[in-house]
Image (cartoon, rainbow, N blue to C red; front, side, top):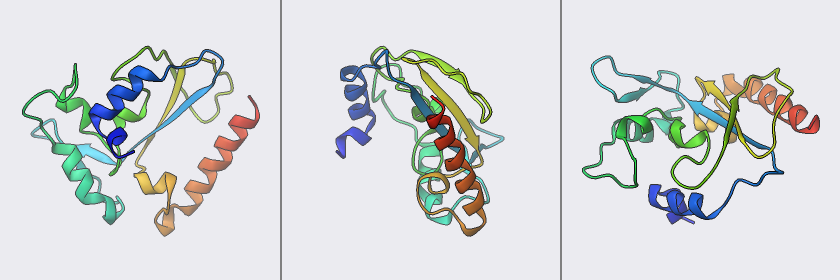
Length: 155
């Protein structure tokens, strides 16, 4: 499983596993970094969960000396949520045929099967959405999941 979390592992998996035409695909893209004014790199926002800050700095400024996968560009991968690069959260981009649908908002009700629909949640770190949000984020997380469950129930 650890290999799958690498760029090379995701590249291999994305080439093997297809996007199925009869399945709804939803991605929630989180980010809580800001571009430095003097470079392409990103830094964690002031309100990011402190546990996520070291990895956010690393991902937000990691340059590779050589291309780790075909078509890789460092600057595409800098924006992140402290655990995952935003670029990789949208849809499987690195390999295979994975049609992209649309970016959606909370009120949208029309979705197509067989394409990747994605929503961007700016100002959310990884723990805000998947684990233990900071105390002042609990209501936001609850609202997110209620909206998600209602969207899925309406399909």
